[in-house]
Image (cartoon, rainbow, N blue to C red):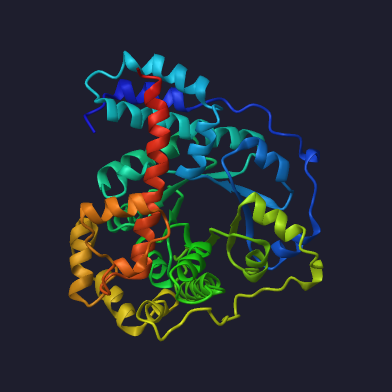
Length: 416
């Protein structure tokens, strides 16, 4: 991005910010006994939507936060709900943009739009809202730091900044966490990814996108896919609890994400956090379960529906295992004298030299293929050297980029 003046940054900040009006009346929302029982097992319960009216229609007093992402933000923008904000922002920024390229201007307008989507939710519910960075920043430490700080400055009381899991993300989150900026380190798919995140970066939150894990196994003929994501999530929760038990400074808490149905909600009782799409929450509420049947499942170790005799099926075990070799490699990383000056490439190389192969060097052609294929990869097209967790993270990031491109295109239509 070109050098933006302090004056321009100030204008963007003003456009992205807004005074919060009165929240929705507390008595507008009711308690739900099944959610109350679920919450009693330990988790915070969040709702996964950027749509204000949809959130209002499903809100219950047991809910304490909301998550948005590039896909959900695009849905809001494509509905036309942000058109007036886009139009006003374009009008006020075009003359002030100076030497910014068209792409850079769209990035700034998108920043404003994302803030407004999140602030509408904050205004209504007065709860924390996760806001996600533009996917094009995922491999750039400098830009990740800059935009994370800018998001936080818009609403430090309520914004949690979502940063995608990349080598540069790990290093950025390490710096931002030390600044006190709350981070939701997103697009995680394995216990080992999140173990590294908790040790190296210590974010407030990490994720397992469990529904996608079940789907990738089923769609690729590796088994039924049942309980694969649940096993990974519960294993990750136990790893994080152990880290927190031995290190009083460890704060990373696990979010169970990409939940598809009420069965998965029940299977993850006791987790640190559940972020639940409205449809899955309603499925759980309508399941017929009794509140006294909801018990913590954290010590449960379900049998996954995956054929471990197949090559890619066998690789699934790396999703829920954190072996001694991996732990030793991370121990050595934490003792590296240049850790705080590392680039993403240096982090990747250091781990490879310790036989920790977590990051594949995807070519642009491979990334383009992911962009075209969608968030659930055809894994037979990939070499054995690629970790399934890394492949899923990159595919998810490319899927978000596709949705972000659609959002950017709508913004650009107002520039013509």
